[in-house]
Structure formats: structure tokens, C-alpha cells
Image 1 (cartoon, helix red, strand yellow):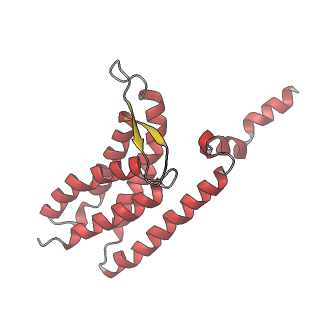
Image 2 (image 1 turned 90 degrees about the horizontal axis):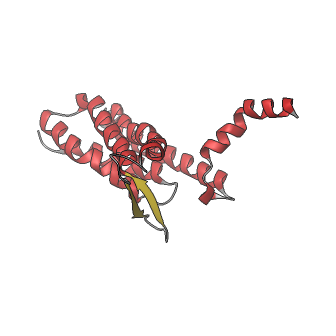
Image 3 (image 1 turned 30 degrees about the vertical axis):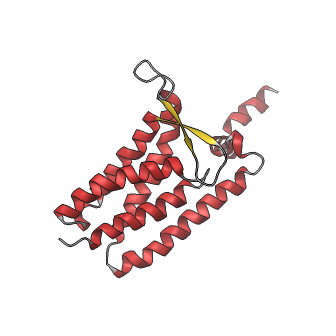
Length: 176
């Protein structure tokens, strides 16, 4: 029995599934996970034609930073610091789009999404004129944070990719 316990801790696939699985997604957590991944890449694939037409492929970094870094770190940071930040509870409830449930978010987790939005726009700075960059820094990170908080359950990444990608690219059409 002792050797079985050691193998259980070394089981990479089981540990990965435990990291992805949320109790509220049972019994269809693989369906939710795969739906999110497929829709995310379909959204980026569709936007890639637009980015290719305007020779602005680096725009993919903005939604990728927000959904990959920001949304990826939002949950662990929110779990770690959301219950007791600055001596008080920093969690809030938000009603998800197309859902009858309220979901708990945390201010530190939402700040991770916001900061990654600023980082993503900063990385894509070369695509923007000065005024376009200022507008992007003002609007894109908060937009990504709101989209992440309000998106339908487990479909936040596709919504971030499409909505933030369209908004960030549309800023390129503002006259200089």
C-alpha cells in the first residue's frame, strides 16, 4: 500500500485533472474544458485573418496575456489572497452572462487580469501610435477584466480572445 501512495503522487495526469477540475463542472468537466479550448483557438484563428490583412500579428499577445497569464493566475491568487487581503474579505459576487448563478470573484484575482492586460498592451506598443497606445492602455485592461468576470461559466477565455482581440485591433483604426 505504501508503494501505491507514492505512485499516486507521481501520477502526472491525475494531478493535472485535479488542477483543471472544478466541483461545479461535474460530471462534464472534460466537455467544458475542451469546449473552452476549441472556441478559444477558433476565435484567435478567425482574428488572425484580420491581423494578417493589417500586418499586425503581435496583436495576438494582448488577448493571450489577459487569458493566459491574467486568468491563469487569477484563481490561485484569488484563493490565496482573496479571503483576507488588507484585513478584510476582498471577494465579490458577479452574475455570469447566460447563467442563473452568481460566481465569487476576488479583487486580487481581478487585479491579476487587469495587470496582465496592461502588460499585454505594453508588449504590443509598437503597433500603436502614441494616442492609440494611450487609448489602449485606458480601455483594454479594464475591458478584459470585465469580460473575464461576466463571461459565461468556463467560457471566459474565448470571450476574452474575441472581445479583447476585436477591441485592441479596432483601436488601430483610430486616426493618428
